[in-house]
Image (cartoon, rainbow, N blue to C red):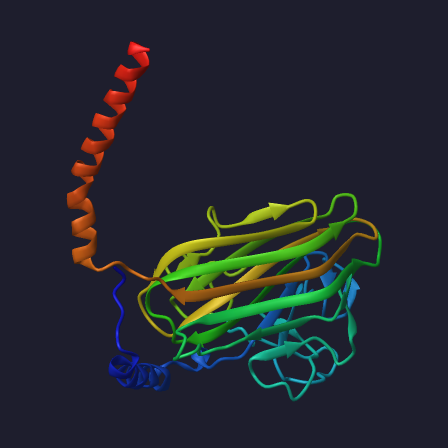
Length: 301
């Protein structure tokens, strides 16, 4: 039997508790979807390929920030490093990020079409779920050679669910081109750190990986789902997805989609578990007796 609670009994108290937690949270806990792209041989400050001292190799897009003047820099993800700030579609609110303002943008070596990223932070108090979803219609290497970008998208300030939960990571992409590959990881970060736990922003001891072993790599088109039982022990927390993309000459990653979702895990009542464990010897005994009878009949035949 699965233990179920009357939602009318615990929901008001839960909302009050998480409301207090949200009000007391630091500024970094305020939800805003961000996307960071890092390319080791590209200077986003001058928009040229360069590894010269002073080059800035990462650009951060912030939901709803609108058109930003070229060369604008800052540290929107609060990681202590200087980033170039990218332009996004204005007026979308803090939980929907659309690269723009045009439908197709050039980001370093890659042309990116239809790039959309969203979250439901702080999560749903009714369904007790939280998610970050990221997608793009097409990513294309338009400059020749082989290039790699580390891309991470995330949000902070999640308040649901709390306790045992199922962390589901879904991924899909049509990958082509010699030497092309995609490495994907997903994380919940209990330190509520933007991009926390990712390859580019590790947070040891505070992050929960959604993929066994921490990541998965694809060298061809892919469609895969991972389900990981975990435990969220404190709020608010952050969620992030990183997908490191390597594309050969004219290589493409089309119809890419990634998501990370937390849902409450159904936990059997202790009494139910004890009953199941107590009945285990009886079940094994019955199985053993039937097995012996089967062996004897086979020998008699």
